[in-house]
Length: 259
Length: 222
Image (cartoon, rainbow over all chains, first blue to last red; front, side, top):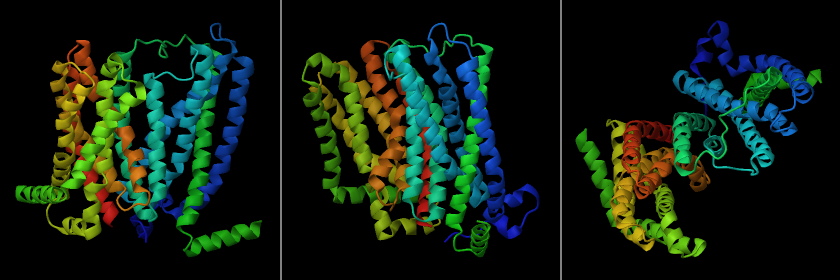
């Protein structure tokens, strides 16, 4: 089974001691509700700005307001993949189990944001471009990113031995991260070769300040949400992995008594 | 070091030759898939001509994907892989030898068969060398990337579908530049840029994929 990582055996000081699942579990439990509350508040503010303060777009009318969900979701989906690749690299280099757990805890959230971006994009595309989907470079690379997420999740779930699942997942996350820019540029080139830019996504009209503010607040809310959900998922994964240890028994008993 | 490379290459080629029926299956799959398309889209010559590069490339991609599980499965089952990992030779070396043998036995037949199949789609004859060259540069990349996926899914339940899910998104750039080379030539803009990019991709994959594959094999065999 899994061998204890070096971080545990050496008992390091300072922030590194949270690399041990046993130390991180309570910390995540303390932090997660704060992030969740921040996410809720920011979402409320962001949606208020988006729906009531921001002016109606003179070209697209009210439909543009999907931007307040669409753009933050697209940003998060790309960012989370990079963060996953970062934790995968940290895990492979430092041999810390928690990094792999973090990597796997982030994946479903990233996939969710990726799907959300595609879905809202399709709903936005229909009234503005007259079609749900164009094989535009951005849309296509976003779709491929979703497939990369699916691949990562499927691989880590299919392997039963957690140690192997961790490492195999880390390798595919890194391979994917190397390929993301290649995919993006190849798709962009392919698209420009095939058809003229019938729909230009890059020529964004200059944005009203309130629109930008709403979008940024929503992006922050997405950050907070992603962090909160990832922390909760990390806690669940830690409990699952460490269920044979003594401290998990103690923690669960204490939590049961508190209830 | 070179002798270890050659020994593994020779062994894999010999094994492939002994079980050559398996190799013919890959080739037959390629041929059948390509021949399915006219039934699906209609036998109108102009249309067939337009889709031919894409069809041939997608079929070659699927055929090499289908063969991937064979790359390590047998050696995994009979313990050869363990012995190879325990040996003092660098893993990257024999992994590369295995991938080479794999490409020679599955990729190369596709490359050779493609021009003949292209004639069924009435492609201009001048485009045939471009098609062959693009496949000759592209299919090794498919083998190299696929080897990483094959090593990661070694012995995992549902491995075949999982392998496809892992590897197919990574194949997209190869498909774009491969089919794009033929189309660019047909369009009159010359295929040099696409072929150079494929060559660059091959150099990059050759440098990086064997390492990732060796690491994945070590993880799988722990």
